[in-house]
Length: 46
Image 1: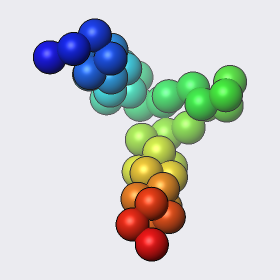
Image 2: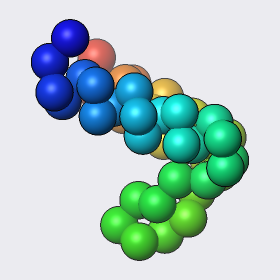
Image 3: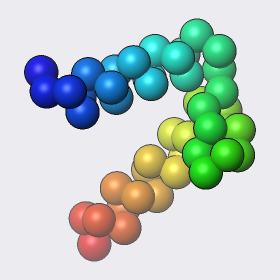
Image 4: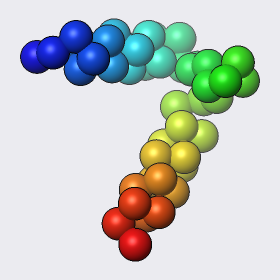
């Protein structure tokens, strides 16, 4: 596992623990983050 992946896992654990993640300084819930990820995936696969 490289450093970037490891950091991603740490960030994800933090989200799961506190239920919020900061994106550009805006707190998002895991649910909102899931929606963003889905939208990004759809955008990329088009």
